[in-house]
Each structure stands twice: as structure tokens, then as C-alpha cells.
Image (tube, rainbow, N blue to C red; front, top):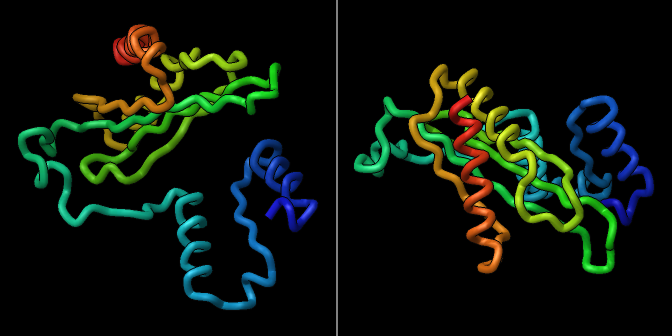
Length: 178
């Protein structure tokens, strides 16, 4: 859309960073076609942005995997990745993001925390604070802290794996302790 409408980038930036309003844009020609697929995708995006659930399991995780999960022992699923600027950019910051599930046992509502960090740094610098914020949010929703955290980490090369594991796991443990 940013290629077809020059005001799109400014609208998104101002709405989401200055005003604090979530927005969903679409081009008018797509809207007047009344394609059910287009409208379904648009509704799915709006639903997710206002905190709705876009997917649900037929059976809860504890009923599907009773050896791993107990309905009375909440589990939080987290995922993290760092996005780096394109190869020719030698100064822009990298962006680290962490998402965490906020409802147990459904585990289909996620929120995120995002931070900028040093250019091309793969280790998430502020991971402890982000995990702590997600744990606080989880507690607000579930009224318990998770008994277990299942953490998915993307984007780590084999040469960086040990260092990332060592430093980030320590940050997660410190967040859990506090």
C-alpha cells in the first residue's frame, strides 16, 4: 500500500507512535470489489489488532498433551527474534522483539515487546526487562505466574548459539526471579 498511496507511511507512523491508535488501512478499489477473501483477511487483521483471538484449538493443550501440560499449572509460550538492517546499511539499529502468550490454557492471545539495540547485535540486550513486562502482563490476565516458559528463539547462527543461549537464558532467569 505504501507504494500506491504517499500518505500511508506518515499515517501509520503518526497513528501508532504519536497518537497511540492502532490503524488498519486498505485501498478503496480493493474495498469496493467486495471479495469475501479480501474482507475476511481485513476482518482478521482488525480482530488481531484490537486484541481478539484469530485462532483457537479444538481441544486445550492440557487435554491434547496431558503428560506435558496441566490445566492448573500455567505455561507461557514466548518467541524472540532480532531483525537487522539491510547489508549496505552500516549504522541503523537492529530491532529485537519478544512475544508472549497471555492466556492459559488457550494460549492463543499474544502481546509483544520491541526494543532497538546496537547495530547488528544478535543478543537481545534488554531481554530481561521485556520478559519481566510480559510476565507482569501474564499475571494480570491469568492471576498466576507461569510454572513453565517455553521459549522459541529465531535467527541465531551455530557460531552464536552458545553465547546467545548463555546470556539470554541468564536474562530470562533473572526476570523470573524478580
